Amino acid sequence: MGSKPENWYRCRIDHKALKRLSRRTNRDGVIHFGGYFAILFVLGFVLVQTWNTWLAVPVFLAYSVVWSFGNATGHEACHGTPFRSYRLNQLLLYASSWMENWEPITVRWVHARHHSHTSFVGDDAEYLVPNAITWRSLAGLLTGWNQVWHYNRELVQLSFGYANRFIRISVPASELPAVHRNARLYLASYLGIIAHAVHIGSWLPACLLILPRIVGAPMHGILRITQHGALQTGVADHRRTTRTMHVNPVLQYFYCNMNYHIEHHMFPMVPFHSLEALHEQIRDQTPQPSDGVTGAMREVFATMRAQRTNPELVWNPDTGSVA
Image 1 (cartoon, helix red, strand yellow):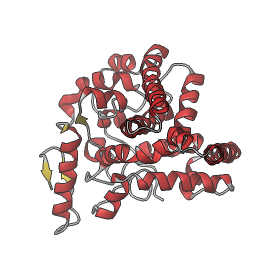
Image 2 (cartoon, helix red, strand yellow):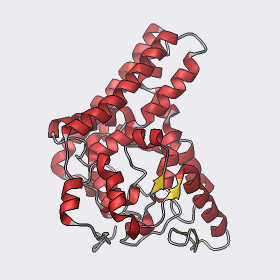
Image 3 (cartoon, one colour):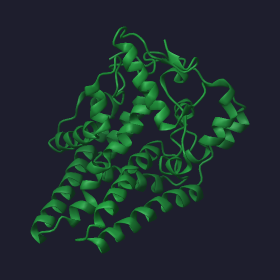
């Protein structure tokens, strides 16, 4: 493990403008996340009503995709920025963590380390697509298996009192008893739902509360690849290690504006609802955004092809080419 990188590059921005953009409100959080959970509830209700019909299949797939964006809501809650209220932020963090099979305290601290060590190999626990990129590492995210396996294994380990090295170096020792308690409670609740489904002889409880995490995982796995995949490592400059992309309004809503990922990493305490405005403030100092998810994935695949002959090559966002 290396020392914490210092002197991260930050774009120039007026102090008053940054202070305004960093303002948290309960109103924005309630409207956005209330809307998200309302959509999820409606899809769940329709799934119950269409159960035992073929219509339930597309409804379940849609429900699972929307469920997968619990990753985005939980990520925002890790920063404590969705709401001004500490209790509302904690409620969102614990609810989203339950949806994503995360232990909430560890994910918050490990994610903080991701921000302080972004793409420093060996120090960033969330650096998931190392250069040179292999099909194996890519497939783990494209299928969602990487994250489903990692977090469920971690929950089991924590429930038995074991913390991996990233948890040990990220989470204060004083919080570990609560970590182990949370892991046991979450794991017990999942097992209880499975036991109930077996008892009543129906897949419905699992399809409502367990399987969406697995079925929807590829959606967010792809987005995780676009965040840092094929970009430079080991440099204290988010313009080189992180990717911003333009996406359609629907994806941007569910993704909590995390398509503005350079902006988020550079100014992590700016709430999700202000990231687009922040982008406008600093856009002349950052690379041209990628053209959606497909454009970002084209950059990743182009880099993979180039790395076959030279594993040191990465995507250069300034030139829009591999270098």
